[in-house]
Length: 330
Image (tube, rainbow, N blue to C red):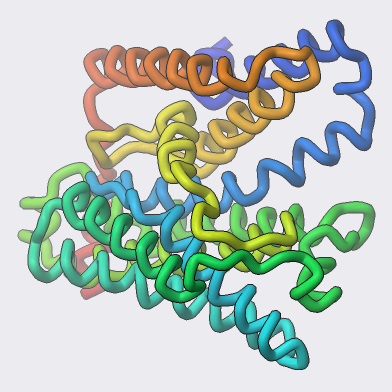
């Protein structure tokens, strides 16, 4: 019974119930190929939600992830189209490194200049989106301009699962380890809970924020390549507005927008919930215009539940031994 009271368990049951309800209306939704496509379609959102979770835990937000993704993806597509002999691993590393640099810009402005995260990332969101147009000249990069291996990699299969699923699985494991067992992760929760106390015990807040936003940017850069390769097209409006879907996944997953509280499992389940809604609406022949409205209703409900839980339980506080560990990390 205690398990059913946990937010993650309730969300997991909601996802299963939603899948079954849609399956009753359209049995094709419950077939293995359909569920496999659902899992593949959720991977990019899961990866970005995991990175966003670490940012939100510090009382921050990264509104520039979709623009970062678009710029890194466009860069990857242009390299592939203009230098088709470039090894794929080099293109992936370039996209990831570019995303990392863009994320570090956010982290430096927020961590060292102590500017508000929402203001900084709102500004860089516009700058990075504009740079996509500058880089591409407003032109599209279509599938026939991209090498076959560039397009094929994300959807190629290993042990029955696409590479996208395996990459997302690795991202989940890394995020779980960072959040639960690393000093870096514990410091982020400490910063989100009590930033003044975190500074008092010697946690290098500026450095932690620098690399948290850098990590968010690196994940966005990697997803930039995976996005353009998955859909075999790159254009200036790639992932336009997707940053709000990423934040919505975190909120639905129980990550507190006030900082200091949230789990990897919650972020994953929040992303899966939105992916199920996105895949279910066309199957049951619901107008796509309703998707935004339904997503908004779900977000409002999640915020209300989070607020109610915060009032009843208070903010998550780190155990004393974790605080001591954080102090000794410096």
